[in-house]
Image (spheres, rainbow, N blue to C red):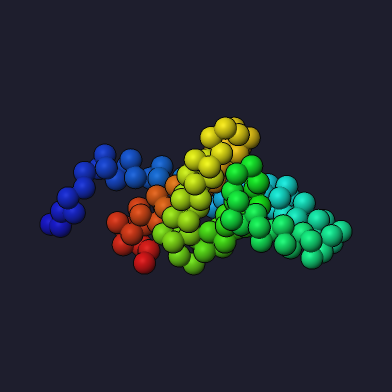
Length: 139
């Protein structure tokens, strides 16, 4: 008789985790869609209207994180794209990004509206990857 080391209770308590396995994807899609609709649309309109001037502002904003969501948005999108191919890398970028933007904007609580959901997306993707790795399901 083969004994796997797991009790029936452990097996039963693992089932709800499968139901929650889509939380990172669902939350990630919702948060990313909201960011694309708010920041992405604004950037596209500004690029269409001002062109080169907006591109210079975007470049400058990549190095000035205080009270400007441009860099946050761009790096979040990069992290979110990477999370689909490399969950530990993409989720780490999103988590670090959320922490950095929060620390750089302690006096501007408006950033919490985007930093907290981004942190949750990064955390849930990292947790999902880690659980899958422990179970032997992911690379």
